[in-house]
Length: 288
Image (cartoon, rainbow, N blue to C red; front, top):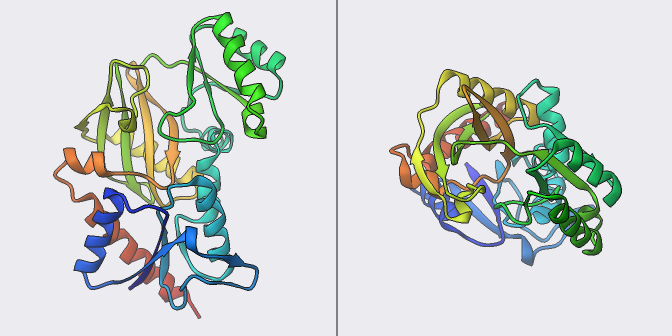
């Protein structure tokens, strides 16, 4: 198998994947997307005869555009550009989850400060204001009062970029100090962990403590539904506990798994490469 690794920085996650691929004898073409150009009729990147390209770009914008170009060149990408586009945009992801019948937090989107305030007042305090594009819990705000809402909305309105003028308002879910991350391959759970913190944000990138989580049949069913909703692939599905049930609040298309790898006996990189091998074989079988 000849795999193109699309990246802009080699982190521990990528090192684990590279090691696993090379140990199995696969040829890896590392493609630093910062150094390449992508045109309508071809690219400076060496993508000839790739069985597939694995998107590990740190930047969402690079991820979205590079996978589109490779798809146009006929190179299969993991994840597919449409899956990436849905996962990267919180509005599109929420619509996809709701459309598939997956339980997901109540959400409203508004386009002016005034209408956003109406949404916030309707949700009540606290509620959550998120950027439509973003990861690692950055620029998310828990809104506890009207004055806080006015201040955050004013800041976003003056930041300039049009995405900050899309106000994504979500109910605040009272979770038990943790959320759940499940890494899945086409809806099949590989491994899972809880991420716990005294802070309302429980992302591992924010310093939460992690612990292995045993995937229940209910969680497995939700992960399968969420994966299918965004188009499938190698994904990170994030859930929160709501009493005796769960809600899916996010699906990640370039999922980081080093924290998960540190707290489970499952070889996450190995399982990912198992799935990639199957994906490459299936692609080869259907090629003319």
